[in-house]
Image (cartoon, rainbow, N blue to C red; front, side, top):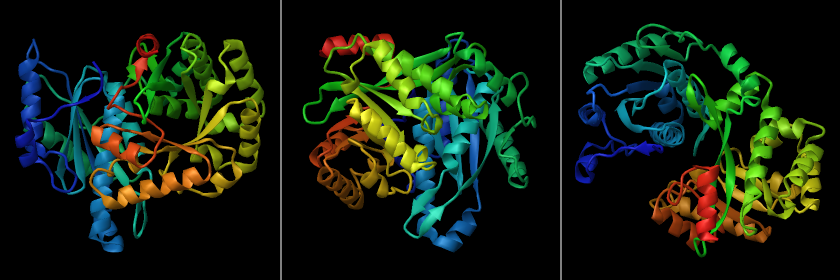
Length: 440
């Protein structure tokens, strides 16, 4: 089953919806959990929940104004929803729990260790800076977790989570805690996960998925971005964000990145010749002296034409040494490989990158697309970015297209390509090969 956000009947959902964030309230959580349990054959559904609370919200409102605080809450709701859509396999629901608190519940069979790993990565996503008109906010989330008992009521679950979250608010340096008082689960510590990862490549536990990409002019398939998942033998599926966070702690990012690139290139070798492959470049890649040679060796060994390959580089990967990054990109570009500046709009948008780097695409962060159907300012920003890209002879790729209305705006404003759950979720190597054949 793919990642899926459940929804109440449309009219009722509107009535229960929080006006600020656009997500339901606690009453919907009660209804949804009851429905999950009723629909489960044994009557004992696998219900996991986490309650996320933001610290210093009053201070933010005082320092930046209530509008900034409201904007931060809406951004956090959006980040949680996108994260859940990418990381959870089963049914899930995000709801507002009042104030600066949100609850995420999931009907998904997963281990205690994996639920904590998901919470850890969610906390990291929420902690990223939030840009508001009056400045940049840095949020401090705390998360209480629970795996519900078979017959436990939703109110009991909420009480346990609330009590644990209140305890967390007063603790310095502790971000996560279980509602039963255990701060970390047994069996798989961070050190154990790092050790597991070192052998995961040899055990062929790293799975490649492909996120299809489409042309906005005629909706034809144009290629795919390679993603990675870890099929952990005990914890189950671990998403790309958690995977690379573990790899970074284990100082194993560069070997992991090369392994993913090799598997993706091998899989793409059988695609129709009109389809492109996009591979993500990490900061560890750019810091490695022989990265260019190793990547070109992988491309040659795979038989995949360099002109059909795009390397996606984020602002984070460029911060270390912009001059070295520019040189590496120029070497790739000379071989026909194209370069995309990824997550454009998510960071500080250093326009110097556009001046000194040999790039071919701007890949918009999903936050640049979220509001284009409802906010004229969001449309104006998108229009300005596309105009700038055209002046620099760059093409724009819109990421995170989830609604037809978003796709239409992106096409109208001149974006060239898009990807997102509207047309396709990340899929296995075999499923993408089937899609490629069907559309080729």
